[in-house]
Image (cartoon, rainbow over all chains, first blue to last red; front, side):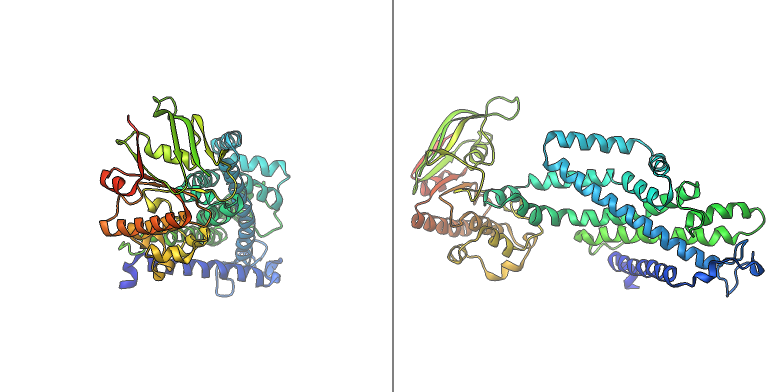
Length: 277
Length: 198
């Protein structure tokens, strides 16, 4: 088939599919009846059936509803964390590239510092010191994911600032803000968008792992990390569906975001328009 | 108003001096050629005169005053490579709007209206260079520095561009610096010639 041969068309299909999948999860997570996740002891530990697609847990809660709500919550936390992180990266990159040597040295040094400490350790520390919960996780993801994007933005801006057309623009009497808005910003916007989308799966996974370790969201919330860590206790008693379906959904959601980000990067680079493979 | 360079010296980092104590004067209505072998500092001198680079020693005066960095610069430079001097994400219309170029100049340079909706990557080098020249010929330009402006163009395009530039030069009493390796072009265009040596 022709559609499968053109990389661009295939990427477009993947992107649409991913967006539909993620949109579906969010819509389900927001609209499903909260009554499904209160205790129904009479149907506890039921394996997957048509009525309970993902089965029920040891309190009789519907796992499908819990998974969708958990994923929606994770995406919300991830969205906020990744957005804040992108903003930090944009601001620091701009500061490093435009405010002189001292600012550049300070930003580059702190970028290196943050990159040298493992993500998860830093995340745990920040999340723990803020007392856990959604606030701790969002602050944690926001404060740990910016360094590599900040580096890219800094390099981008430096390259554009020294480009001949920006120098000419300056000599034509255009003020600094005009050059920033018309020359520099349109160049870094795609970088920011792709960086944001590719940061998203990291943020979600880190949210899930910190919650899994018990330092994140509170156990009352249907977060995906909570579901997974609770299900560990029941794996040995044969309740495989407790971990399998939520884990698989998390995997799909993360892959979907990565696919959207990767494809967007490809669309932005027009030279890849007619790649055969 | 004269463009004067007084005792300019320049070196890149700790490399030997590229040139030392160069004096240069350009009066309105004058066309001066700048000749010299590769690496003799022609482009660097151009960039200093146009205010892109600060000289290591000496200064550039415009009408007796040091050049300011704010507002439209009366000294404009045209680069050798137009594809590097145009924002690849801008349509050509925006390039002309940035410099507020008059329509008569577009006509003289042979810029066709269908080019305006294209991006730089979609036009040829000669077409792009016309836009760069048009951009440098804004209302406020008093001195034009043409650094190998037509080196990469065919003879017909060269003639068309230089005709348009010289007409504008006569109308507005502009001063022009012509940098080229082609002795004949310089001899034909210029009132006097200045040589740089290595």
